[in-house]
Length: 111
Length: 114
Image 1 (cartoon, helix red, strand yellow):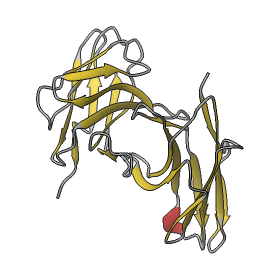
Image 2: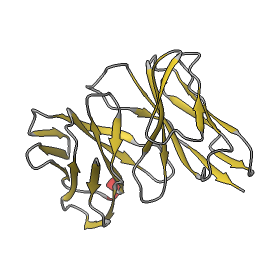
Image 3: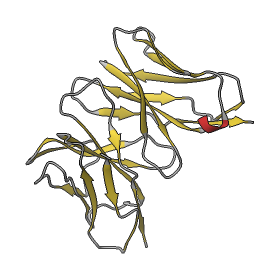
Image 4: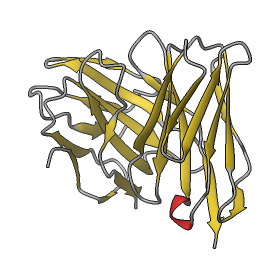
């Protein structure tokens, strides 16, 4: 069956450090992979999209990598700030224009 | 400002009742989606619609119904057949066949059975 797995444990890091989140998937052949941020009680907000033929994408302090051989994406938040504290969701876009989501990883950045 | 409006923010349902969650968007998006979110689980797709007057079942459609009579609106009805409806419901949209941009989500409706 299809499965999307993100870091099961919450991530607690010191301000200024880099947070690295993992998204692994099985039985998918995604054309695109997306990352979202979700704050408590709110809807997810789109952050970044990476295509299957791209290895890396950057946006300000965010970096995403996509390895279709390993079936894995890594999401990095560099120079982290307390305002980066949130849950981050990985989502796969297959050939049917529907997104499938992982359960998310909660990040807490300590000042 | 363009966006998606979900209402109400909180909804309480008695056993055996049908309730309808509203989702309205002014983004001129063709595709709209309903997801359910439970603690510790990913978003699960209930129904989606790529164009007006057409919609498809997602992974967990049992106990739910939708309509898409207008481009702007995609209401979700939680019927009495849905045995465990307590959850956070999210509506999303995007331009049809747009795979460059992500989904735009509403702020969600939290449904509780009392």
